[in-house]
Length: 338
Image (cartoon, rainbow, N blue to C red; front, side, top):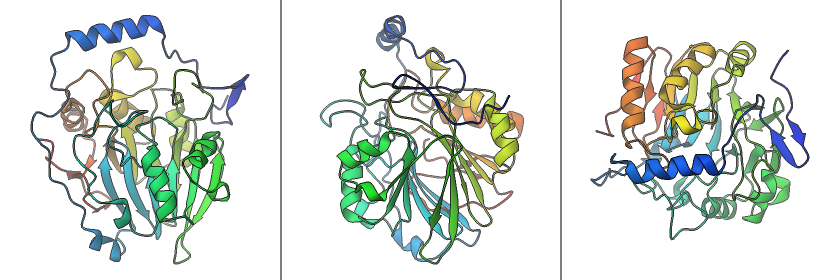
């Protein structure tokens, strides 16, 4: 039976595509023990960067049709066949309910929100703080009031609470699609698909909004944005139904075995990439900006490099803030993290 279907609910709560344990008090006790016992360099000891985006790059369209600017973690600008989509933007100082405590950025934003080019859409995968920054959303809503916002079921109310006009928001259920028009008339089809994760901006509203992965398909190029997800057998069906992909974005950081059902980590990311078809390049995301786990901050990309070399996977891993074209067959590796 296909698992790529619209989401189910139990009462007010959305349900994962396969049985998934999030964990309760017992997991929190184990996590606290790891937090106290660990000695890894979870935050860089030296100042990173500076990283700076040359905004003049956006004055010229990418020759390949696909260009990505990765701002760290899961925030990026996707320019695909004439359409500009900003994905999970977090310019906030901290991925936290408050800006005076919580995980702090390893480096400042590589450009100001005011410097972003005209956007055609902003895509928000789910409502966690490391994917939806309150200050960022409010500022963007003011700077680009006519931009279209695409998100998962229930997240529209969160966006509106931060200043986004209701008529600018489109919520998508799994398997639903929306067409985004570029300034020149180009079109990109954005399709919401299941992921194995959860939602909520507090302990009291978990699962009450939806989480998702997405396919972005332009006239020539295709991208899979995995957002946050643990391993599940649906990756193969996504690849068979919606692939192949020129670029596959999968999370590799903020991982621990305690939450392997809701996060991939490098090893499962390579497995998922294979299941998705293994075409094009694999872009490691969800790392390099916030301390959200117990591993050393460099570990995700170090492990990713090992796996890519062992299994002959083409990595696409640019430096933060650098607008970089995706060219078929061409690998991109940056050593900024060293």
